[in-house]
Length: 148
Ligand SMILES: [Zn+2]
Ligand SMILES: [Zn+2]
Image 1 (cartoon, rainbow, N blue to C red):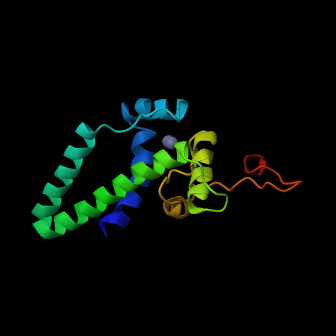
Image 2 (cartoon, protein in one colour):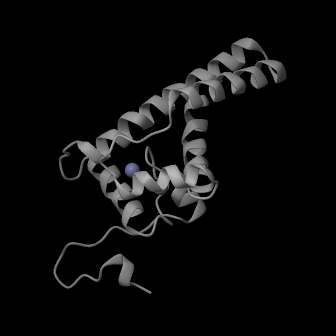
């Protein structure tokens, strides 16, 4: 449950915090300007947030439930870190899951940052209608950004 919740949280944080709320917006803009630079959320910020979330869940439910959900969230967060690093720095085989993630994230960086907020998965972009269409590569195709 925590792992699935992470994918929704990743989408929400990226779309509504990193692209809107200062000072996160300015820091995230640095990533958009320099996508291959090693810019990310510092542990001194993320670790207290996970601990605070655990405290709230433990208070509202139980310590084992809070631990399970927090573990799923943290595993999702770490996986997101690996995927985000890979989409910017690793090679991928055409047609692979990583290749599709790289293309999706590249569209986010290209499209004025208003589409494709999901890095680990495109699920929530489909749900919220922020998924862009991949550019077709065969002759005569019209690029997605030119379609009306
Ligand atoms: Zn990125
Ligand atoms: Zn972004």
